[in-house]
Length: 290
Image (cartoon, rainbow, N blue to C red; front, side, top):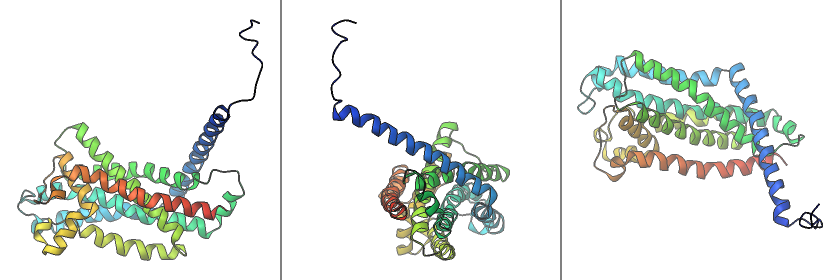
């Protein structure tokens, strides 16, 4: 052993001691999140009612508005034909599926709270952040087959994307970002709801008018002025319009600033919703874990 390697062992610096502890906490939180993600995915497979309902509503809307009301609702800007109106409609149906996922997320979280599942987790040496993070990760993964089914439905009714694979994938990425923000809205509603039965009474009466009062079915220019302004600033409209731009589907653009910048707003709105909902949801989970 040389003189250089014979340095006497001294006390470790606080920074050196802190780094392994921090890495250990991240590794533990990651591992706990993976376990709870798997648990939530298994629950979705064994109790598929809520995910199926969230998917069936947009599919029924495609058939109803695309074929029953298509001749009436086809307007200038959407191409004026039922076939082009269905291309105008499909991005809205993608966003509707992401929006209605709030109910499944909130119901699942509220049931866990109501059945004292949190108490069982509380008895385990588990990272508190793993509970909401596992739910968010599972719901985001569940969105992939839901989007695949809707894309397949769209292809069957002659919906197409016209701007290449890269922009189509970017549109799907925006839809998943919106889904992630809606998942955290559902988590927050689930931990705040007094019981699981209240969740459906809160979510569906809010989600349906919020979806209709957007550019999903009708351009804001065809609405009364106050409602048209609300529809233009609706976060759902930004995601729908951005998807239409990226897919190359018909779009009726307004002359307001927000209507001219749908891509920027389709990122800004979900990020703002995440910042608004995720911190209080995590704080509420920590209180439940005490």
